[in-house]
Length: 252
Image (cartoon, rainbow, N blue to C red; front, top):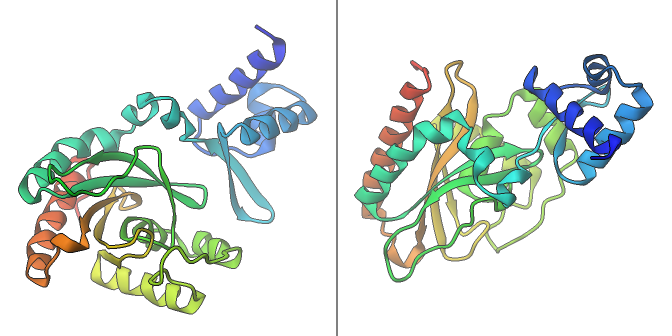
């Protein structure tokens, strides 16, 4: 094995000690010169194995990417909240027979880490490892609403809104208003924002500290949705989210 590969592996091992690391911290932990760390980190980021976390222009760190989901589900199996959530997601899916999915934040995108399909002849298709912008769709918007103010301001300051459908939010002020509504209501709703003819509802998944670590969503073909179903779906979805919170130690 080449020395560059061995050094890159050792650099990745540093993230076992801390989830997010700066270039200086990586140099200290690895013992490599800063120039070597910069070169390796640049290659790992380009290859999609590291993600840059830019809190401010002077506070830039890196963390392990979830790209490994594309190579298999091994990495996602290590996620405590995914393991805790799956039995509850399965029960919810059986209750409402709609697509149930979970997304997590990676960089400036939502990544689908788990999903359970409906058994209906006409159903929505979501791929594990698939990505979505944070401003389109109920689950991604929940992740956006779960950001702290510094993180959210940084995201919005660099955001270029792209229309996926006629219903996609295309105005920053409207997006800010939507985020506040999600915080107030506790859940997010979407109507054909990322995919046409799709209704979505999502609740946040909190860890023991109350931090949003994922979003639990239900997606429904618009042809199967009626306003009468809304309270039933929301109640079941909320109860499922709360059950997962409790397993993760959140008492709120």
